Amino acid sequence: MKLAIMQPYFFPYLGYWQLLNTVDRFVIYDDVNFIKGGWINRNKILINGNPSFITVPLVHASPNKKILDISLVDEQKKWQKKLVKTIANTYRNAPFYKEVFPIVESIIYFDSVNLSDYLCYQLQTLAQFMGIKTKFIVSSRIYGNESLSGQSRVIDICQREQADIYINPIGGLPLYDCNTFDKNNIELQFLQMKPINDEQCSAPFESNLSIINALMCIGPGEIKKYLGNFDLITPNTSASIERDGV
Image (cartoon, rainbow, N blue to C red; front, side):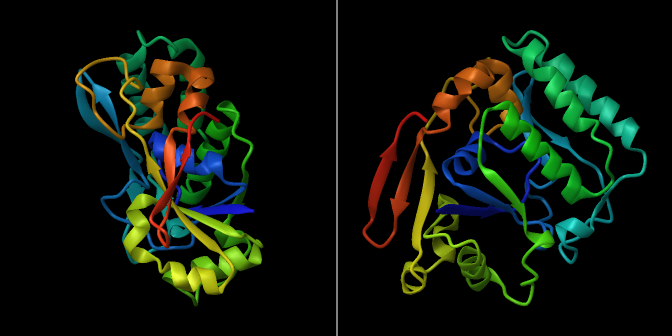
């Protein structure tokens, strides 16, 4: 069984969805500390050809707080309305606007002030929209292993889920020791996204934009062929298992 563990991100880029799609179970890691300046409450879209942030405003967000303990600002409707208008104005001429916009709008207007709940709903809704069948697990609701950290906690979750393969984005390569995973009968792999140059509607190309951009430009049906456009790196042998298609 293949497992991945990631913090919930706000409309994450295509590589996040590749990871989510390639595993059997995906743990939404919400009982870890908030990362300020990361992707938990913001992402980028192209506005007038320029990469620009879209953001969920938070109340006293801090790296000293866990994601599940952070709230959205009280005046939700105000920022939600502004964000929906920005996305509408940006993508109303995109090929798949009529199909994608209602889903994006419903996600943005989801009625919750809890950051974890808000992001979990978003991930599950978009996964269903893209036809991703992966099972979701919310870490704060099941494990109770906050006394562990880093690699030890990841291995503990893998063991509880009886995972024999753990997959992480390639950026996490320095964080894990494949020998420790091997000793626990878990194969460690890293997902490296291949270059994709046709996921946006205009030039010049900008990498790692929000999934909103890809959905608006290539659509939820066509996007499936991009979900398998990556390499899986096994660090113990430096070999790669190539995957094309779904």
